[in-house]
Length: 121
Image 1 (cartoon, rainbow, N blue to C red):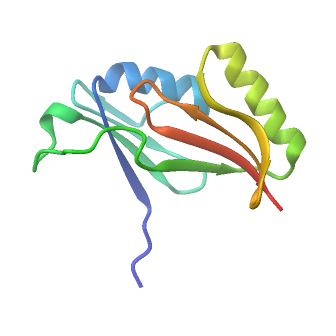
Image 2 (cartoon, rainbow, N blue to C red):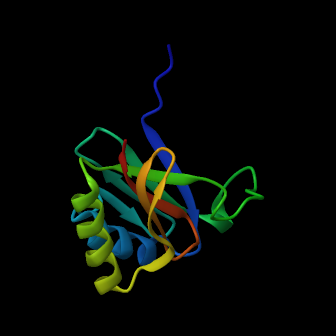
């Protein structure tokens, strides 16, 4: 079985995006260059930020077509993250709301990639 362990996001400026994710995730990239930044997260997942203009073959999609999801233990944890991200000036696409799968909100990174925080129910 193949087990995905690496997400690549195409971004306009990897250095700017790396700063955003460093502040959001509380961890620095393990690799950084003008065209790429790599985060190795506690979960084992790797998050790569790749300069859109250097992707081969050329990437036709832009941000917002998928989501990175952050599961939390409960509604209180979701609200705490929401308050923190609002205070940091992160763009919010959906305020906290109850949906059929749980309590959730959606934020956007600087390139329009969706970041969903949720507590499953």
